[in-house]
Amino acid sequence: MAKLVDLDGLAYFYSKIKAMLADKLGKNDVATVATSGSYNDLSDKPTIPSAYTLPTASSTILGGVKVGNNISVSDGTISLNKSNVTSALGYTPPTSDTVYDNATTTTAGLMSASDKVKLNNIADNANNYIHPLTHPASMITGLADVAKSGSYNDLADKPTIPASITIDSELSTTSTNPVQNKVITEAIANIGGGSGNYLPLTGGTVTGGITASNFQTGTGAANYFQCRKFRGEGDANSYYHAIDFGYSGHDSVDFYEYDPNWNFYKCLTGTKDGAVLVGNINGNGWNGGAQLTGTPTAPTATVGTNTTQIATTAFVHSAIPINVSSFTNDAGYLTQHQSLVGYVKSVNNTKPDSNGNVTITVSGGGGVSTSESNTWTGKQTFQKMKFNFESYNAPRISGATDNPSSSVAVYNVQGNFTLDMSTLAGLLSNGDATVFTAYITANGSYTLSITNAGTLKYAGSATDLAITANGLLLNIMLIKSSSGVLSSIAQASTLS
Image (tube, rainbow, N blue to C red; front, side):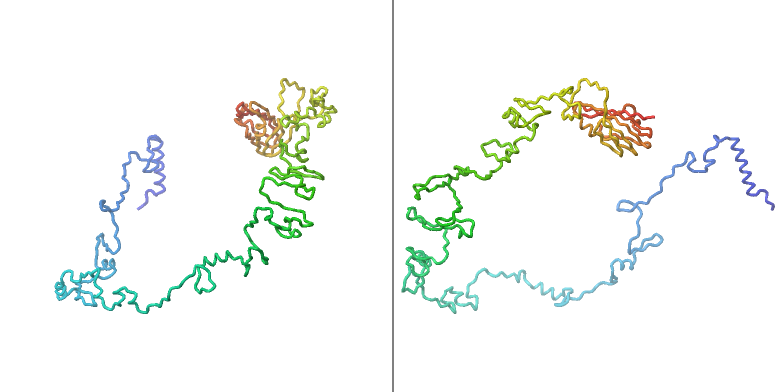
């Protein structure tokens, strides 16, 4: 049969009808879904419930379960067969009853009827015997006689005990008995006959060294320790410390004394009565007529000491001021020395008067030089300033940051630039103010940041601080309140 309309022709026909309907009805008369074909563009769509999830079964909830091990399932039917039980138990259970034999003396089993009859014939507590706590020795066989009598005489193999020994309480030249050790100790302490290795009390010669904790020689003059030479460490020719009495050629003596004073006498007549006291050593040191010859030395007192202590040349040198500015009333110099004569020769060829004052007269300067730079260390207050011309040292600075310390500066920046105002702010006292001026040149456009200036306000806008190739004139007024709070006002102008 001949084809009346092919697919291409049908598509063309549909497009013509669609176009005619669109022109006829207009876009406002056709729902969005007509052209989109999307379910989401339908209105009054039905509510579709969420997908159902089968809960897990529990003792209180009916739900889905899954088959565990050793259980069979087929077509939804759960079964438990012999193979499942065997696999779960780990062995094959018997299929018939177990038969046990009667127990024997070597094999466990069931009790026989005869054994049960024998057990029934045993009386209650038949073997519950309690041994008595005591019983007569006659009940025990095999005991020795000593176990029954407790007598030493009934012991076999008794030791032989010697007769009693007499110990003497005094020494004897004939007795063979032992003697008490206290008797021997006392006898040794009282030995003085000079025999043997002991020194007699009335004399004798010591051939070895003697070590004693204390020598007692008596209190009378005749009982003083008599010795021609007495050395502390040995021969004074070999030791640095020695005490020599009457030893020719050695006059160096070291003393150690715990008394308050050491008195030194000079013998003028050769006898004790002719001795003259020349001095003593007490708690304050040597007390006598000191003879300071040659180059004597003494400890140097600390600066500011004002006592009767000897002043060394080092103490005096450190105490004398090195210039006029060092003179202070606190040190007492102006009080003790009313005139500066001897300390100051002259000032600008003017010598000090009798009161120590120097009058300086400079023509037109009022005491301040006008021909050279003056450095003021104190704060200067000018009531009326009428200057025809002011000049500031304006350093030219390059870099990425600067902490200015003068009122005027010139910068040549090559990138973003930061001004740190902490130094100028630190120079301000409470209640003071200052103005910082800077001329900034650059080879392009950069940002300018101001830090440590307290609360910063702008005369205009903060965007005025932008650096351009035309240059920037910057003024910053720093103000510190009476309570020390810092605030700043910045004014920037881009040059044309």
